[in-house]
Amino acid sequence: MFVVGAVVLSLAAFAILALGRYRTRRQRVRTGLHAVVAAVAAGAYALMALGYGRAADESGDPVNLIVFADGIITMPLLLTGLALTATPGGRRAVGLMAALAFVAAVTMATGGVMALNDGLTAWVWFVVMGIAFAILVATIWVPLRDLAGEGHPYRLVTFDRHAGVLTLFLVLYPLVTVVGPQGAGVAGPTVTVALFLILDFALKGAYGLLVVVEDERLTLAAKAERAWPTSADVDVPDKGAMARERLMARQTRERVRRVAAERLTGAADALGRARTAGRARLSGLAHRRAAAARQATDAPVRERPKRAPIQTPFGTVTRSDIAPAAAIAAVLLAITWPKKR
Image 1: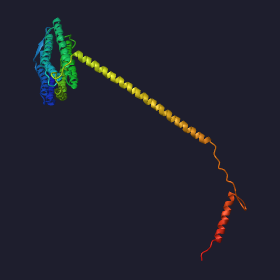
Image 2 (image 1 turned 120 degrees about the vertical axis):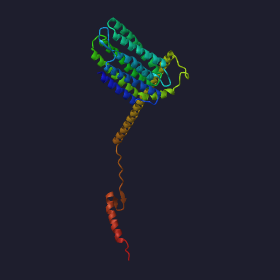
Image 3 (image 1 turned 180 degrees about the vertical axis):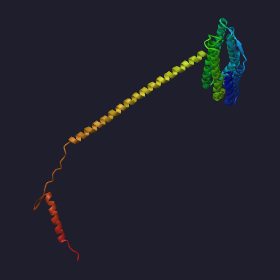
């Protein structure tokens, strides 16, 4: 099992070096940190496979001290990488990085001391480890997250994701120790080693790959942050003034939304009234046309007056006599028409 851990974590270290970025100093440092973390973990498993680092607690149960030595080295390096993720471009946070690394080393060291003891002494050291762990988590999620919030929005999103992963593993490692032979004894030595192996694969291998893959976007965010004004160029308001400004901005947005909604409602009402008036006008026009059509249909038809008959010396000539008279006139005209010689 130790050999598998050494091989897998060695491959993870090579993958981090192959996929990492090297254009900027931060990229080189971050890639190097996570590659060293995977390499140290691989070396620790190789030493355990060779039989080094074994000890026994007060009750005679075996303890792998190399596991805790590995944590004392790798956890400060992981948290230093997280601090680099949180630090905006053009800024430095050396003091915060040093504090995180120290508290992480103390947490892992107290876990090793707890593993070497038994009974009440072990639980006292567990309480000390819990206090150190609480300080570590509070440092990650309060000052370090505030530092990330001063930068580009993508930096804060990335920090929240990475810090959430690290916090989860910081909780799981002590839990495995508690349920193992050095704690409640629920899990045996083989199961405990297997659980530590899975956690190391996920944290020191997969998490390192995640960080170096997302490093390019952080570099773009750092370029944008370097163009921002610094605290020497602008007046930084206090928290009360910032809270008042946020409240005023929220009230202004609500007022604008309310006025816009009232105007939209008024426009909709006016449009509805215009449509109703238009329908009424069209309906009245249709009614007027229908009434005019009915009046035209009901009006009496005018009859043309009959013409009086034509009186001649030969008698009265009617319309029916016109056609025969015209025919006789045409025949007489044809007979009497002079012919060409």
